[in-house]
Image 1: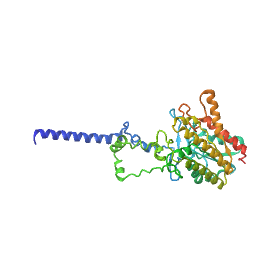
Image 2 (image 1 turned 90 degrees about the vertical axis):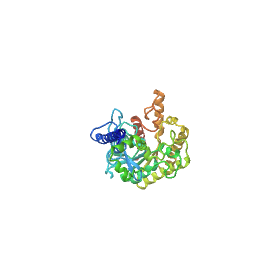
Image 3 (image 1 turned 180 degrees about the vertical axis):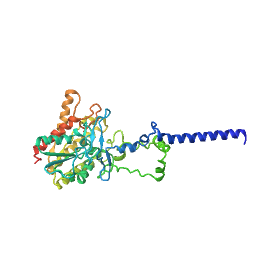
Image 4 (image 1 turned 120 degrees about the horizontal axis):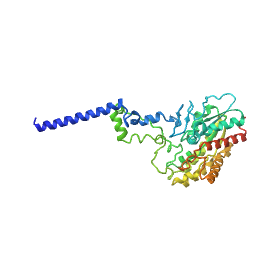
Length: 383
């Protein structure tokens, strides 16, 4: 072999050995030493996120609250969340109602679940239980069946397969805004499949399962592809075409009338299910800081739709002979008065960012609970 070829061969050999050595080091060293951006959690943030997520997949509801979920209050996020062992964001309960107890189940989305207040123990269903116990002197249990993102589509199923088994004396329904978004989302369908997605199951090929044994592969997947970004947001798991219509998902509705009709039908179904199982029903209008819609190009569509759905709640209550609590008027008038006095309200969250909408502060939750307790007492529902 000529000297020139020998040098080339030697150079290639050194290069290959160096590359192999570096790859081996990359594969081995992070397994024994924590290296930033190469730790197990950073290479697979999705597994970590959903391991600690407050929701989990459900075959009939798309997703539900995770039983026993705990989130401690921190300086960065000072909100305490404590699900009970059944997955409800309220005190522990048993499926069978204790003798002598008056039990209420609350249906709703995130504003019922408790996005806004500072803890599980200041959300409005919990405060409602305290208010009613103080007023009536009786044993009261209020079970929070609310879940982030739920509309009446999910709540009627939630009531049918879980709520009625709690043997409620009263079913309290607090919905509007999520049904509004369903109605204004493109491609409206009777069964809401234009909006609610099936929770995707990641069925991995044998080849991918094999490759996941190697840090090199997981590093490339994490930082060299869009794999993580496409999966990290819960919306991508539960909403059809999530992000496709940004920045305004509600500016191009295809058949909003069908969405509004579905809302009415769902409310009727909830009333029928509750009554079939011997429960009273209280329909409640949902309060909202209406000015928060102004950040959308579709603000007028959303405002008009919100008014229409509020009227639907009132109409269903009258037509089906069930009581109504117009909590919206109380919440919004109080917030309006506070804004007139100080420039900001204390009822709805995030007044500085103008996107609190229906989500309530601790003060807002207490006001709603007091309003509901007064109405329940006025109606003489607690025997």
